[in-house]
Image 1 (cartoon, helix red, strand yellow):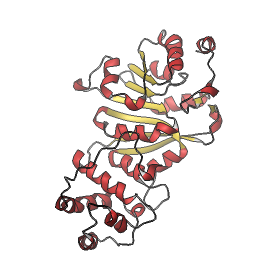
Image 2 (cartoon, one colour):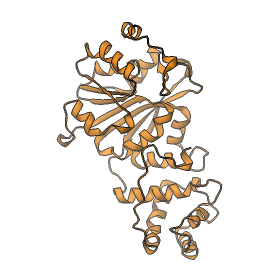
Image 3 (spheres, rainbow, N blue to C red):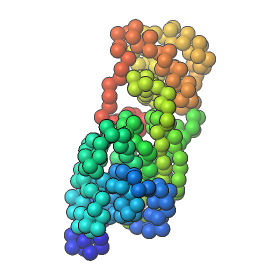
Image 4 (cartoon, rainbow, N blue to C red):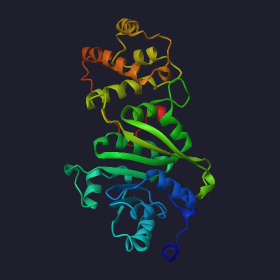
Length: 307
């Protein structure tokens, strides 16, 4: 890999996509040990960079599809790793635009035959949240996801109600997955050195989804409204939304029926409370001529809470 990088005049300080490359081999070994790849595993690695994790995974798994947006890095990986790792495939693409079907095809497998993917990656900050949200809609095809992200992002994924980190991302993730912190990684393990430390987390899809796809979409719409302005109470955020703006009295009755104080803010509600609220709000949406199905945001979404 070093010879290939030198031939291409690779200089990580000029990277355009916010990459910070893991250079600490001990940390890489610990991450792979936590992932525990097996001989029948199919991996999709997002942002393989210089291949520090890639080679270790390919040496133990059935197949690895490495998605790299940088043409130079993709070329380096093809020359430096693919020749000695025949089960490694390089897909030069934006990970936010890659479908699960493309990955299965690249690995010569099929989801229709019961194939499942294990996702791994050292995610740049600018894609970590949208990428996780994207794959939360593809959980039936996922065995687990092990990502290294900025520590702040990991804290938001694992956050509990009534904490400053708790918000839309916390609920998106916890609605479909169990979240397990695995490792803390110092910024000193990367080059170029980032300004913050990182965390490695594992997201494992829940065996029994509590909600149907439609119920989940409705719930996340309510959560989005609840966190639209964190300074406002949940009641006032709902009342300010056009779907419920003319239903203040009915909203008051609904809150009383659910035992919710009108002074509570969205960040104090548990997932179970949000689920009950979304279920009770459905008739109000229907009464206002709304079909109850929210518009799907682009994977790179701009929810106010995520900015």
